[in-house]
Length: 235
Image (cartoon, rainbow, N blue to C red; front, top):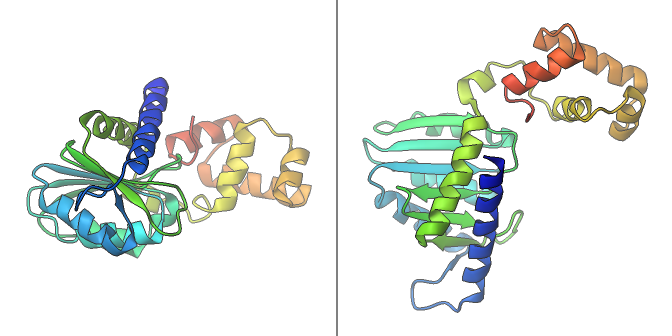
C-alpha cells in the first residue's frame, strides 16, 4: 500500500507539473485561482452522479470554496470528507448535516493535499501546498484521477471517524500531545525530547504521564499502540 501511495503521489506531482507547463487553451485553462476556484468546484459538484471525495488541509481559500460547493450537493450523493485536525471545527460539523446527501467524515494526521474528486472521473488538486494565491489544477486525465483516488483511499482508510475523534479528550487532540507522541514513537530519550520541544525535563515527563493516563495505558509502549488505534499517531 505504501509503495502504491508513493507512486500515486509521484504521478499527481508530474501531472500537475505537466499541466502548469501547458499554455491555457480557451476556457479550459488548467489553472484556477481564488477568484474562480469556487465556480470550478461548484461545477464539479453539479456534474456529480455518485460520489464526491474531498481532502482538506486548512487552506482558507480551498476550505471556503469546498464548503460552499458541498452545501449544494444533490440528494443521493455520497460525500467523503477527509480533513486535517485543524479543519475539525463548526464549519465541518455543519457540512455533515446538509440534507439529502450521505456525508461521511474522517480526521487524518497524515500529510494531505487539498483535493476534490468527483465520480472517479474528474478532480481538482491544490497546485502547491501553502500557495497564497490558491492556484489549483483541474485534472481530467483518467490515470491522474485514479492516482488521486488511490491517494485519498489510502489516507481515508487510516483516518479516524469524526465522531470518535471529537469524543477524545481535548488534551489528546492538542498539537503538543501529537509532538510528544511522535518523539516517543521515534525513540527520543526524555532529555532529548524535552530539549527538542523546548520544555523542562520535569514538564515533559508530566505531560507524558498525563497522556498515558488519558489513553488508559500502563506503559509507554501501550500508549503508543493506543495512540495508533485512535488515529493520533501513524504506525
